[in-house]
Amino acid sequence: MSRDALVFYSPVDDARAWRAALEAELPDLDFRVDPDIGDAAEIRYALAWLPPKGFFARFPHLQLVTNLGAGVDALVRRDDLVPVKFSRLSDPGMVAMMTSYVVFAVTRYARDIPVFERAKRRGEWEYVHPRALSEIRVAVLGLGELGGPAARMLASMGFTVSGWSRGPKDIPGVASHTGRDGLERVLAENEIIVSLLPLTPDSRGLLGAAEFALMPKGAKFINASRGAVVDEAALIAALRSGQVGEATLDVFETEPLPQGHPFWSLDNVLITPHLASITVPKLAARDVAESIRRVRRGLPPLHEVDPGRGY
Ligand code: NDP
Image (cartoon, rainbow, N blue to C red; front, side):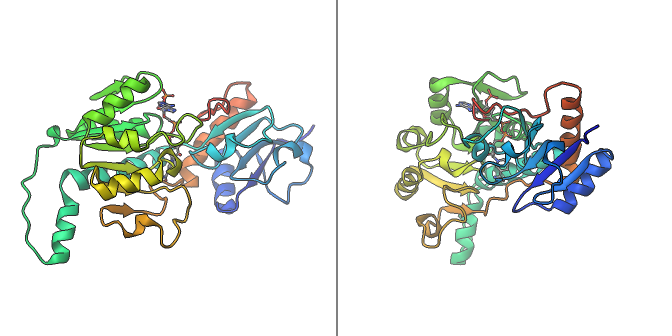
């Protein structure tokens, strides 16, 4: 009988940590790290991040590809995918970490912290009277595995929260909007806008000059999803004119953000180096293992990705 093996490929992730975490969940799984894969015909599962072209076709009995990350834009746009099930990582640790980033970035604006950061640099005591959180309107674009819990948390903190997604959502305290008219309304009615949209053909460059112009003057923008959801040149222009008052950016079209990029010199931009949320193998392995168990039983994996839809 052929063995049930998984191939691991990642230039960045810790194979040893993943092996230990997955073996604790699935002791019968044969965990192999590329290029030391033995008989390719025994590989049924791949746990991979940015594998080389032609990687998947090497395994004739592959059934499931799990993307070693939540964002699948680099995976689904490949032209060498094979007809198997696809899933992505998601785990409570990743969700909590993203929620903490969003809460930090939104609260920093809600409590006028950038004003005090600048005042401190000038050595000045500048008082801005705080506003009730309920007066502060926040929109979360993308209400999926990460955006949904972040929006819910903001609402539970007392912010007035709207959300935008492809289909309608029922999240306590979060007004649900869909469609182009929903997007325009959400942009026009909220002073803090958070993007947690996946990068897909529909969302690429979605937030450009027209969309920034819809926002209330001085709006705050937070992007923790993918840089290319935004037209960066339009965002820079909006930040220079003050149409967008402040931005917190964790993701960029080119990463690392090149030296000399205009974002570096804008005083109203906070830059973090793509770490709003990360995966801890020990926490994520539970769902990866459960997906394998489900595929063994002929069921769809957890956190299934639809390559046609792009997320
Ligand atoms: P999901 O796939 O779970 O959710 C995506 C959400 O976006 C869904 O609510 C979906 O709507 C909505 N959406 C997708 N396309 C459209 C569209 N065309 N119009 C309106 N709404 C749309 O993604 P996650 O929440 O898990 O993650 C979001 C992104 O965050 C990832 O794709 C990744 O790029 C990024 N990320 C960034 C990290 C970082 O450290 N900065 C870490 C992890 C992820 P519906 O629910 O109706 O389908």
